[in-house]
Length: 228
Image (cartoon, rainbow, N blue to C red; front, side, top):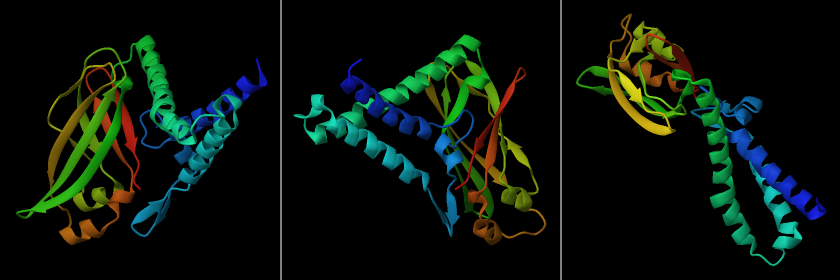
């Protein structure tokens, strides 16, 4: 293998590592890099120092490609666009494809399901407190799954509602093949121990972790969704 090709593999490898570090862990909303460098909570937000590390890796990889002789007469802008629009999506597709093959070989059911996106928020109308839950589930398996969902509340919400979890009433289905299933449900809650709504809204419950449990008669899995 020529020195030029070794350098090409080296710089593409750096970009691959950067993308891999951003890949969410199974049944966990954190990526690998977020466990290595956790977010720092400040006031009502968070600082993600991990983003700086990833940016440095991407810069090293892309600047390395600039230096290769085969790209000497190519537009730097074109190289950047190629990395962003082709190489990075291809790496992500490869990681998804690998995970799909893993679940297919094992014949997994609920284990093959993960949360792609989630959102939980509070609403108050007509003297009713409501938890609104939005989920996008991605099924890496190869067969249909039927299940129910149990929502384990963040610690603050447990204190104010007096409940550890809520069961959503409906049955839900996924169909494998990395298809996305969207779910939106509302749960009407009652505050315990004479707590007031303002106390709940002022709490920092959105900083805390919550869990979604998918279950049926045969199996169950828990998926952690981290706060800020």
